[in-house]
Amino acid sequence: MTSINFNTAANSALRTLQSTNTQLDATQKRISTGLKIGEAKDNAAYWSISTTLKSDNKALSTVSEALGLGSATVDTAYQGLNSTLDVLNSIKSKLTAASQNGVDKKAVQSEIAELQNQLKSIASSSTFSGENWLSVSSATASFNPVKTVVSSFSRDAAGNAQLGTIAIDTSSFALLDTNTSGEGILDAGKSGNASNGGIVAAVAATTGTASSGTSTGAANYAYTVGTASTDRLQMTITVDSQTFSYDKTGSANFDTLDHLVASLNQTLGSAAVASNSGGKLLITSASTGTSSVVDITAVTPTGGTITAGLDPAADVLVTGNSTVAQVNAGATFGGSITLDDNDTISFKLALNGADPKTITIDQATVNSALNRTDGKITAVTDYATVITKALANANIGGVTVDTTGGTTIRFTSTIKGTQSSIQVLSSNASKGDSILTMDVSNADADTLTKYLNAVSGAISKVTSAAATLGAVSSRIDLQKTFVSKMMDTIDKGVSGLVDADMNEESTKLQALQVKQQLGVQALSIANQSAQNVLSLFRS
Image (cartoon, rainbow, N blue to C red; front, side, top):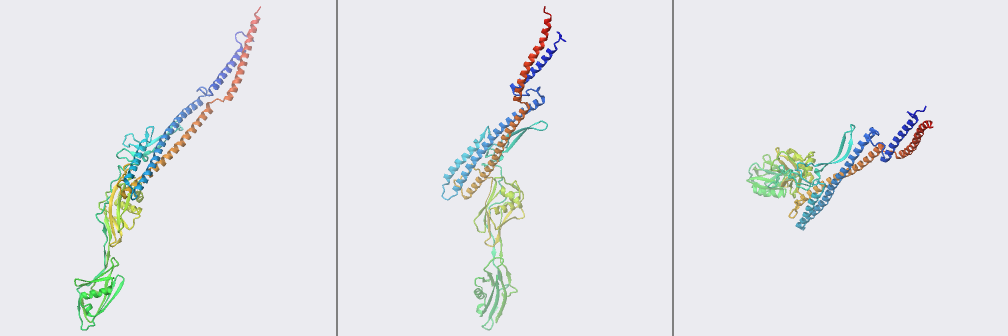
């Protein structure tokens, strides 16, 4: 049926052409933007996901920049520590040179002074973007030794954003600290221990004693001459481990004590000495010590009569004696001392006639002896244990350390006799030496050794700090690489969600263009039917 009110064919062709034009517009938009989902109306779910991921990727880009800033700051401090290490090694060489005889120490000091200035310069100039980890002031209210570098951005299962950081504790890196109670690696101790814990120098050395064995009669010597000229006296005498037989005939050899003494000395030789001790016979061993013994074991007179002074039963036996040298270290232990990492307690010990040796106690000695980590000594018995450990570290034997039962440290030589001697000298408690103020101009051997130890300790700390920063720098580089890969991965994922397939879209475009042309022709044909109706009304 043909109607002038409604052209069904034209209406259908129009709707088809409109649909084609809509599809063609969408395809052209995808081709021009490169996106199949450019707005929420294109696909709300995918658009939301892609928008969030794009935002996260921008955050990751900022993280990458923060890592770059952190890496530069770490590298600045790292290079500063490396340069410091070179200068410290040079100072160590100069100190070693100053220890040689005949070296002009003032000339060496002039070189060391320049190296000390260089250390200050390195510490103060190791700055990046206002951050200096090597020269600090821990007294500042805003000071925090723990620095953070933003390292990651992520979301948890609930969609909450989270920032990851790399924490760097710079407290062991600082070379200088202007705080009066703070300490940098190059600084002297400012808040450490200054107590020697009761070890003070003795005024004079103490020596052991050694006495000889003696044997003396209980009464004055008395002898009655016999009627015959053949009077005889026989005696058996033990001196240490030797036995002497005295056998004299003729009263002139023993009628008086002085005659007997002279005669006995011929028999005893160098093993012992007989003497007249106020009318009593005294025999003294030539040796000393607890093994020194003199004893008259038998007396037999013939002819004359011994009325007194040579009765073995009444004889008083005196064994020799030896004692050790001991010294109480003066002051008493103060109750508690704590050594930080550059504190030392030192003293010299002269033992048994040998040259004095220096004993040094530091935090490592305390921790090793007491199995601690804080360098703390809380009891006098623990202090004795620490000193024993320090003696072993210095390869000093022949001495024991204990307490007197109270709070005083006691040193005791392990040998007895007059060869036993012990003395404490040059006791000192130090909070450490500043590398920047060392002066070798008039330094003696002990001072140079102390400086060398301080520099060696600083080298060890700087080496450890540089190793830590090197590890942090390596981690930051790895994180930068990871973040870069994450950004690429997210870009790829977003692209898979919202990017248009240009091959597919170009093919669609060509098809839709053809379909559009056909739609226009179909609409034209459909409209042609109305023209046929008009022709019926022409005359």
